Image (cartoon, rainbow, N blue to C red; front, side, top):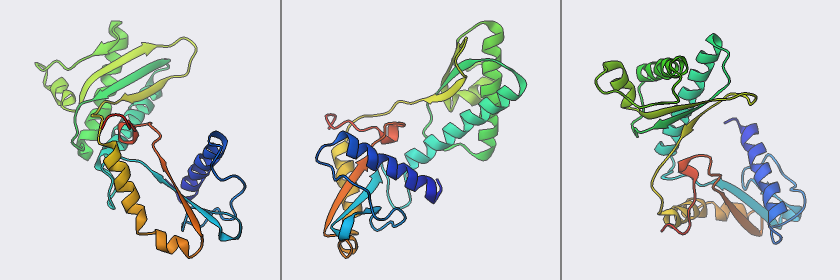
Length: 216
């Protein structure tokens, strides 16, 4: 994500907090570009830092999120490849079962395998695929993907995406880890702002950013 895209996303979350939460600081921030903290308000009285809630994230990032992004790119590449050859309005759901990052050669195989599978399902009038372990080509695909489902659409635009599942719980500890990660920056932020607010964003778009406070 580029710096400008990151800042636009942070600004959207700032505005959403202002709209939804009556006690959240209102008004226009003085600074949009500064990252220490993300937003500063009038006369340096208030600073707001926005950070993402992502499972198992450390200074090197999150392996869970990295795998999700790779899987998402594979599905989007498969959609592009399919749509270059066919004009079909379909919804495709790919359910991943592997937590191992695929190699570059595996990624090419997966793109090709998803396209072939979707094409075959349409031609056979079927709506779901599970790996047939007696077939070597399907076995290779099945090491990473447990199911591919399709649904033919009449008017809506095609949508290809990943179905995700994962364990719940441990969220309180992860929030505490996010707090500790930002705590070391408070002294620097206080040089510019008397009060600091921290907004932790769990957008729920992926399993890695799903927050379940009651599942502890």
